[in-house]
Amino acid sequence: MVFTAHDDTVLAEAERMHGGNWMVKRRDEPSREHSRTDDAIDDILGDAALNQRNSAWPGGSPGSEPHGDERRSPLVPHAQALTLRVLAGDPARADHSAGVAARALALTPTVPAADRDTLMAAAWLHDIGYAAELRETGFHPLDGAHYLRAHGWPSQVCDLVAHHSGARFVAAVTGLGDPLSRYGFVEDAVSDALTVADQTTGPHGEELSLNQRLREKLDRHGPDSPTVRACPQREPYLRAAAGRVGQRLRLE
Ligand SMILES: [Fe+2]
Image 1: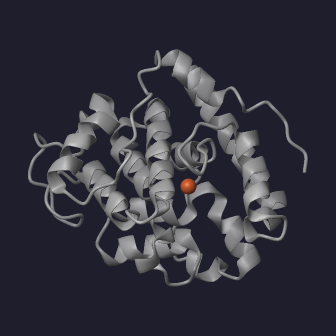
Image 2 (image 1 turned 90 degrees about the vertical axis):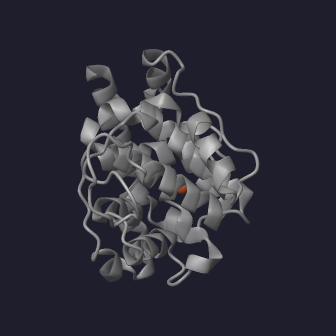
Image 3 (image 1 turned 60 degrees about the horizontal axis):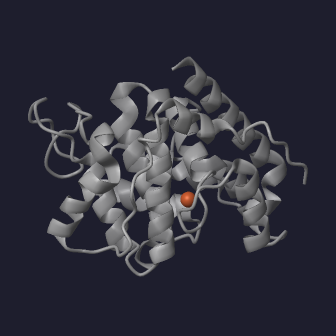
């Protein structure tokens, strides 16, 4: 496998441009307690995320109708709470999800303001399909998306979870391309930011370069794993997404 270094500076540039304000804390101990979750939301996401207003989805359950544009969107807190609940038995995965949310927060300047809550929600939720209670096909992007669709989450969130990090290339080598194709994939600033956030966050939430993340996947999963077998098709997509995100950061 050939690695290049041209994308390693993407997140370093994000940190430089935002003065390190995107560095957010992660929970050490995921909890099901509502009050603790609510308290942690301000710590984890910070004002940059929570001040986003989303008139398309401002209140109630995930599928509820808008109530007005003065309320904060509950989309991101709901996503965080669901993630921490279903991954409570897998603290490393929960930490990874929090790390991806932190990275996504750093990348919100690269997406339209109206899509920032969607990006943050998908960042929290992208790996919930690993939870045992959600397992259907064993392919976590698909299992997570199935659960979210069945529970009325917005279609854009379901689609982003289904296709995060080039899932279509992995699905192609595992024979799951057809069920995955029932979810729409749009190659845009939001899908790029989610993929780059995931691919620059390690399995315990640590910051990694894209090259380090690709090497860590190879070491952890082995050369015969679907993820690694999909690399010839998937890696160029990941590098292209990182390049586009880097370009958007420079223009921002
Ligand atoms: Fe992930």
